[in-house]
Length: 104
Image (tube, rainbow, N blue to C red):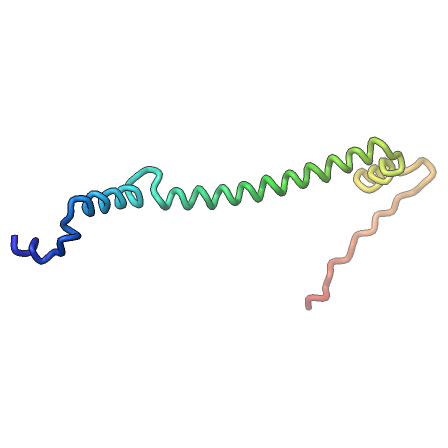
């Protein structure tokens, strides 16, 4: 009992002990502890970035779709570039691009 008297009175206070136990449970022992919350926030930020990227991609695709629906020249250009289509009286030559060797 002598070691209990060496502990300061504010640490022996029942409210302090209850608060300390609560903090230990919340920070370490609960299924929604502090570390799980931080990991979920990190994942949420990553998913929000992904959502923003895909929303911008959808917006760009919708604009391209509207251009394809309304402009025959755009439709022809798209077919030539993406699907390598050609007119009956044309010949198509594919020239591969050279890789950039300027890094050497």
